[in-house]
Length: 134
Image (cartoon, rainbow, N blue to C red; front, side):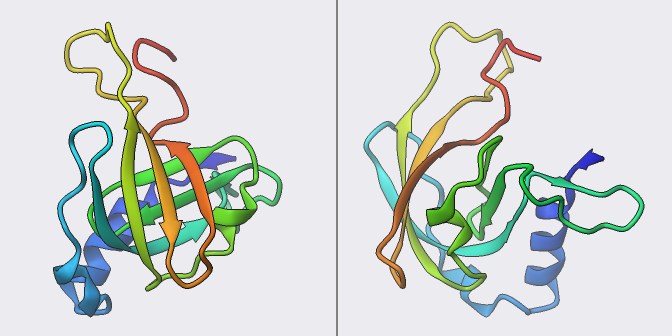
């Protein structure tokens, strides 16, 4: 098993070859708590993939990335996130930023997302661990 690190690479390649034409219209990610920005879903999958086959590992959690560069992850399967599809327009709001983090450790921001197509909402962190963690 391995962590699916291909989200950013897949997103970058898709934008570079024009597979995500909507990416150019995604707003920059919100940087202050309470701020929101519209973006699009780039990829939805599981937290882990099989290192040999590249196949998603069911029950390993949820991973979702957006065209504005934000990726969210959970150890749990989050049905409202899993219902999203690449290309779905989404509203992404910065819900919280951890405090007292070591310098340079920016992990642990929590975002609330709303998928316009489904109307479903979910809140997830941008990392499996909070700042200062593993």
